[in-house]
Image (tube, rainbow, N blue to C red; front, side, top):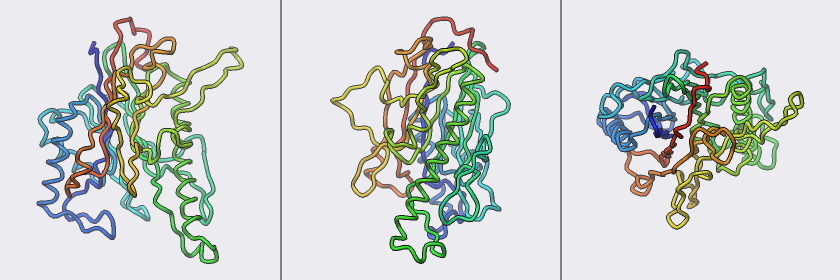
Length: 332
């Protein structure tokens, strides 16, 4: 069995086909601009050399296939994802997954919030019943004895959600618009937590969640996804169904060279792209089958601001697997 796994999350920034209008205030890519963008992304993928990669801001899955065709390491990789809904009121980017390891049947996206979750948002006629962007779920088969559930997410941004016709009498339009975005991001986080909790109740497979959380690790929305653990009254035991921010539990962290960030806004350097892991990769907890060795941030491109580059840093996590027997971890 492979003894090291590499996971990466990569917000590619508006990957759309040439001539495709993805935002009203941004012109479509020309053929030359598109070629430059997919070549740049392909170079970053080869540089990462990760086993499993989650992508965000995908407006066309065909463009992902074009990227893979230009790589050296991923031409035969598995690709999972769906295009945005063309019938939606507003075109919203989707996510995708690339894996060099086998992907079990049934991989796909979740668009509706689970467990009939429904949240009212001020000034919006209908309650929120769907994720802002679909959550992708795939089961990665590491070996005949071990598979890992991988989730790729992109939570609602901090961009204010203006509804001027509803807010005309308010003294602060921006405040209400920001509140809507906060509620939507929180609802995305809660819906994702419901999915993870259901998974953790039904299987002991390890979990990796990666994506653009649009907030820092200490934010309430991010912590909602991670969870607090729970007490099983029936069995009278503590169930550790938390997830852990990989950066904080890595074995080889060097505080003297700590320059990790994935986003720059108004002069503030923040890490809003995260890779979370379940207790299976936290060596401080019983039953761990591996550990996060280190977390690397590829972010030099953010300083040069090339038009084809993304405005997000890329996160790469190396996970080491122990030699102990993992045959009791079921594939299904």
